[in-house]
Image 1 (cartoon, rainbow, N blue to C red):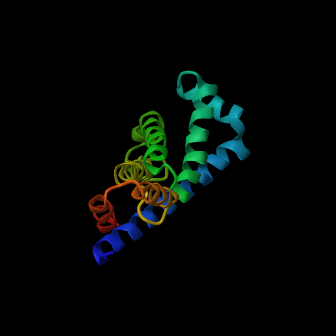
Image 2 (cartoon, rainbow, N blue to C red):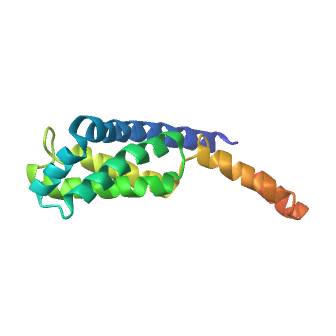
Length: 156
C-alpha cells in the first residue's frame, strides 16, 4: 500500500467514524429521548407529510445508518438516507435561520457534505465492507485465471 492510499484510507476512516458517531447520537436521541411520537409531532408542526412514517424513517436513517457508517458496512448506501435527511432538515428548519449557528444551516450543510462524500468514496480500507470484499475476492480468485488473480492482487 503506498503512502497516498494509506493516508486516503485513514482520512476516510476518520470522517466515517466522526459522521457515524454524530448520527448514532442524534438517532438515539430521537429514539430514546424524544420518542417516535415526539419526533412525529415536530414533523407534523413542520408540515412534513406522513409525520409518523417520516419520524421512523429519519430515526432509522440516523441511528442505523450511523451504526453502519461506524462499522463501514454498506457505507455508500447508508450515507444516502442520512444525506437526504440533512437536505430535509436544511430546507424545513435551518436555511431560513441563516448560515451561522445556533440555528443556522452550517452544521447541517457540513453533515450533508460529509455524508455525500462518504457515499461517493465508500468506506475505505478499515471497514467491514473491505473485509467482505476481500473474502469475495479470495473466494473468486480460486476460479479466476492466474493473470486476473495477479491483477486483483496488484489492486490491493
